[in-house]
Amino acid sequence: MKLYVGNLPYTTTDDELQQAFAAYGEVASANVVQDRMTNRSRGFGFVEMPNDESAKSAIEALNGKDMNGRNLIVNEARPRTEQRPSHGGPFRRR
Image 1 (cartoon, rainbow, N blue to C red):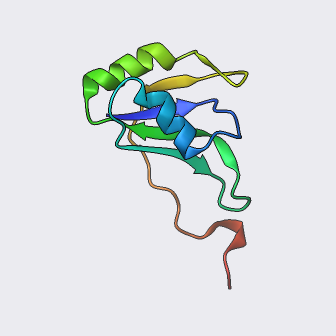
Image 2: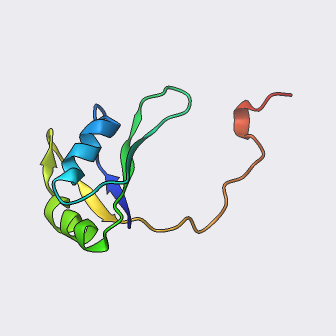
Image 3: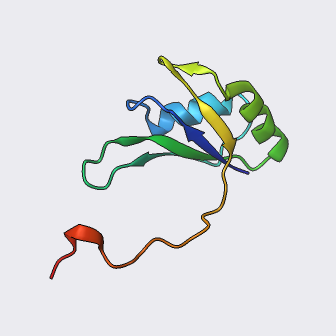
């Protein structure tokens, strides 16, 4: 099950995110989303746990829990509903 983790402290690393969820079961991957321009955390990430029961336990335990002064938002990740534009945005090369 893929989990969305929001309201992360901006200093959180992939390893710290993985460790927080490992207490509830096996973690296949943990990724803090980085801004492409600044390479800084965007304050959210995703965790994949192969066992759905472990993932549900993690959601129940960690949703609303304080992590370095911020209350985490943890829920099942929703699939993207639309594709992002591929026009390159305002910084595309000409």
